Image (tube, rainbow, N blue to C red; front, side):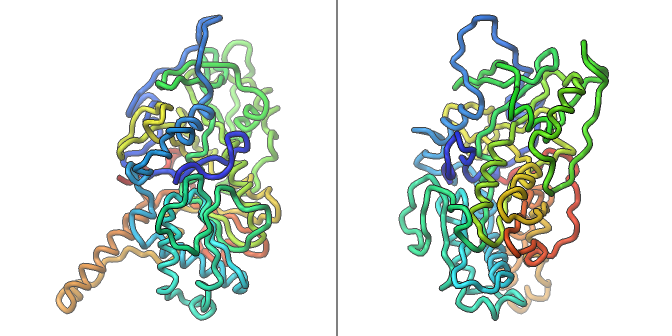
Length: 453
């Protein structure tokens, strides 16, 4: 669960993100309310020295550098749990998805299961254990010998944990382009790919936020180049009611679809600069370009199959006006401080990642759904067992009731069920082949779901 593949320069760094209680945008020091409530940052006095860096570099050191948060001896599980930890039903659902991918690909001689940001290998362990008990209609017969054909890979920067199933290949890098066929899953990996934070200054000019190890911030240089182009494409700024000095009329950005190829990189940059409307001072955004690059690189590792990114997310139609960067420690939300004492995480612009994945080699049309819909399509209903079972088999009733509760937690639309599932097909496979789902419904807002304790 410590930092995933890549370096701070290639945009592929990251780790499995946590699920902590009470997660909502505007908290954790990124908005006007919540833990660590903050006021807009101020530019430093002219000529003042500063040892601060951008948030991307600061988070890279704090999370994955020597003594960083993800290298602590207690491991991430000492501070939070993911859907994998919430219930073995999650691994069982992934095993069902794996069997469906296997069937859709015609049961290849070798099938890969790649867990990006694998932590201590909990998901792979659960899937391997669940394969022998699958009873999925339409795939059980063809899945014969799947365990023997399966090649599980854990992509993880941390050392291989003791006692892990010897079938799991532990590697620090993403697979080479086009090298594998099967299912790649990144369960809350992208949220911990470090990104820079930008904030509109008192004149409405977006500037890079610089941060010290103690979490104090200042505004740095104006955002230009590729980062400015990404913001123009993917993150509409909240605007003041009227135009600022020396600006043109305010223009509202049109919403983007939930998933699809998206605009060509930088296609909105010229329009955004020409519009010149004044951003609301204190508004913040997280520049998601490193996550787009990380996801595209992961997708390119497949020659054929399905890549799935699971994360709390927002889309262009409803970006949070103050960003989502926050910290977590011991299962509690805290002020984000890049000193290695807490996790640093932010919601993911999964629609931008989808566009980057769609541009990757041989990638098909991506689909973005909620975890609730995806898990239900994989057989998790969360229905209570019939009360009559309590009379005939009390122990069985209690077991079934417990599983129903776990399924309900995983699919709760106000909790884990509200997470986004970005499904990216590669090669001949289509998402509908393995996840027959209705058309996705836009989220109620841009905040994403809260985290589970």
